[in-house]
Amino acid sequence: MLVLNEVEGWLSLEVIELLQDLCKKRPTNSDILEVGTWKGKSAIAMATVLDRDSILHCVDTFIGSQEHQHLYGEVNTLKDFQENLKAWQIENKVRIHIGTSKDVAEHLDDDSLGLIFIDGSHDYADVLQDYQILFPKLKIGGYMAFHDSKWPGVRKVLWEEVFPTKNTGLIKRIEDTTYFQKTPHSYYLIWNLIQLFVEQRKQDLKRYKRKARKKYFRFNEY
Image (cartoon, rainbow, N blue to C red; front, side, top):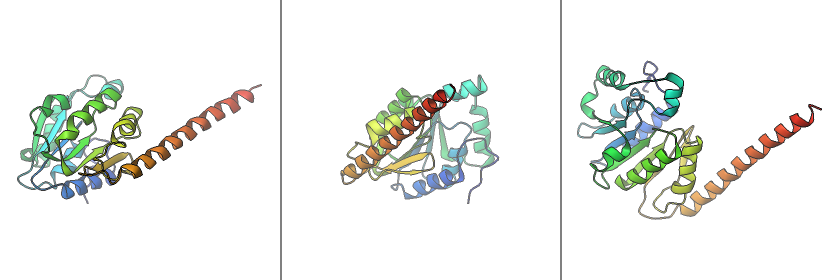
């Protein structure tokens, strides 16, 4: 069991184990790509189970997303990231790309990746770009995972793009990470759409309860 408490990041043990499991299950002779790596917690989790001939592509601006800049101000995590890779002796398994998914995707062949982990900006437009650009790069049988999938921007992309996609296998979630396998068929399309309907109704119910509570408290102020 890999414990990464000394590396700054927001991955739970359950999600670390999920990423490692997906690394092991991905198609053979395929690389891995993650969008958003911060200081390397997820990269270390995946690279430590990679075979010798595979590469983990880490794509990041290393200046933080809008939410990071709001919390920390100006940041540059590249040095910390590189030092963490060196401390875990995995720098030879990782290829660093400074930029966005758009910057790196044009250098990747279609159907070349076995696992894509999206954990960059949670803004809707950015997540949509990550998905639309990178999904064609994923091999049939490969996996795509979205961290922080309850965030509005990420959830909207999942609802509008992923759930209705014919080449999406059974969509699952562990804690805050939603993932699926790319398939050559649409066997799971109806089931995924049912899941989407249920998720949307749950959100509608939550909004209704919030409105009801606000109305109740306003009424009792008088």
